[in-house]
Image (cartoon, rainbow, N blue to C red; front, side):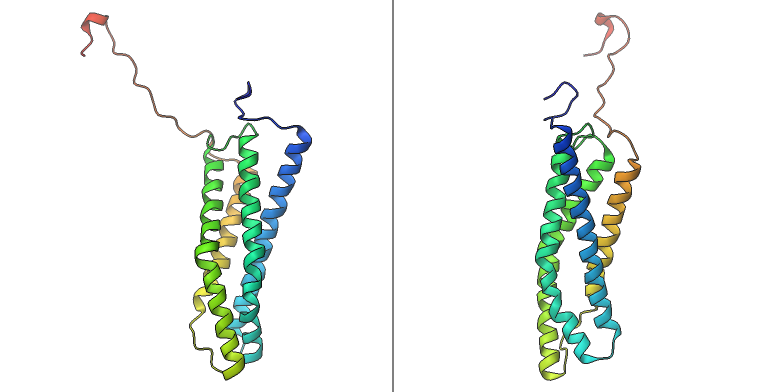
Length: 183
């Protein structure tokens, strides 16, 4: 550990490169979420069956880009935390950002991917038979929740609120002479 409490030091240019990767991947992740939201809301609000079918069928194409951006953001954030004075688990705002990124990344893998595949299958059925055959209104939640959480993480990175996390307190020694202390 370096003398300033940083687990490993990196040169300023390396840190700037890591920060650039973190900002770009977070921004791209937000952008992909916006595209996802536009497609989902277009499918839900339009009366044209062809548009609905196309919007649902294209959704799975967003899975890999969002997963790559989520992992890139998470990995670059961890690297920044380990190599900066902010630390990975020293400040509550960093811990909150880490928890948001981990949670959203897990949700992408476990819930979003299968939901996008289901929507594509429904879109294919709609294009072939004219019947959607599935209730897909729940697809509005991933882009809303993810975009909101990522914007919150961005605000935390800018404002850096809350300070250091609390450490476990060490009980103060008992008052009086050593012989008067209760054991």
